[in-house]
Length: 291
Image: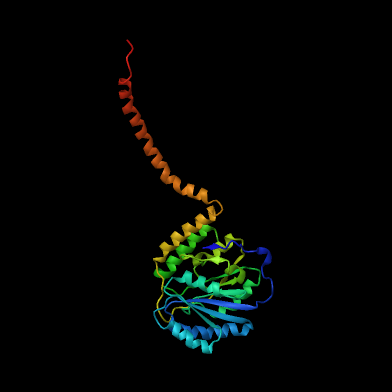
């Protein structure tokens, strides 16, 4: 993930007391049973805000009838917008697609599995109005299995805090609120939606955090497990390189190549000395003898 060449302008943050339009970005992958109750909760949470809103559902190659249900729900909830990806690209790609389609001056991202509570959206927006560019949700009381979900998450968040230096407790929480100008300058790839806060902080954005509700999953199955820890490690390594050598790429390549090049250089040196010793006597024998 990186930022566009146009960096975030900290001098032109929105400082208004309210926002004009809200975009809610929701990646969807086989969540058909959760969509109708989610839309009903969104309407209850966003309706009283008296703000224009759009709900961007990004279907990430679902194999169930998620898209068909969204099309039916669109007649009941006109705020729904549907973005359909051709195949399953992953949560990061789906989130990026939603960000690119968003038109709001404030953007909220969340999951479609009903574990995030839409009633937290007004609280996130209120926190954002304090002058932050990004407010991250913190699932302090997670309702997930300890071994397969909570433990890997705690390990990943500890590593991110240690390596990157951010103080966010829950980098993997999808429930976040962003100022629109920040979102549209992000470029997400791999599984780096977990590092949005870290990259935004590197750009100079002001990051806030808010405790949010987390609920147990009622329908469907989780798409993530302990195997994602290895992806986090590789993405964390890549992000650390970007943070350290982003403005000095040649130094970065040299630093990475040095551990491999130095042993090769040391191995070649004895070979050259041995070759010199072997040829020295023969050269001496060919030397003409003065009489």
